[in-house]
Image (tube, rainbow, N blue to C red; front, side, top):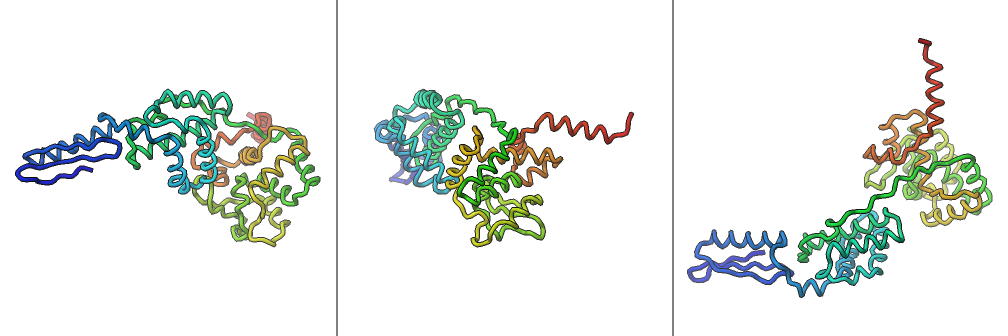
Length: 335
């Protein structure tokens, strides 16, 4: 901030900004002093003034990431996951790089190295954290980073959305595997996921008070996008509710991590490979479309705000659409 004071017959102005040497000058007219202060502050904001290289040399990427993890990450809904990702970043050599030598080429080398070991989507998420961290440091912490280095590099192309759906008798194999397992909740949970398209986190957070059996609807208080929604229930979903015990406030009193572990064991028993629990959401949304529901109707159930994202989850089977066309044609009067 600039400070302006009158001393004798002149106006003295001083501009102080963290990471930059103090700049001062005297003027006869106050308007000239104010104009000069705005000019200096503008040059600092645009990076036209040389920063305090000593300060940049003392601050490392690690310092920024730790501060970001402690102050910014806890405010996010995905704080636990982001905190884990930042911990991984802190173990990388990039964390020891000082801001003085941090350039877009350094970030580009990090990107290329990570792409050799993990999927592009993972690298994109890591770079997103770094980019926001540097932006917060520039704009809110008065760290004299002239240009965000992440914004200057080419981002890796994200992998194509998964098109995995249940094939052959995989659903039957999974259910039979549940009968041979030790978790009585796994079977109804899998069936419920197929009937509702709900995410794993939404299912484990579900409470009996969220169910309106009379209206045949279910209230989801918090989705991944931060919005609540009310979804209609299929007869099969209502039947699942009727068969579950009500000895807990939660419908499925089990943790997300317990589901992850049980799912891994189940796939081995069932002989099913390359199937994630989240793929059940893909399967459910695709089935809703195959039932003939419209895009707005499916979006109401799935909670998608962007139909483009919704279509990423939708993988109709061409043979099913062909059969539907045949049925429509058979009902139409002959030309």
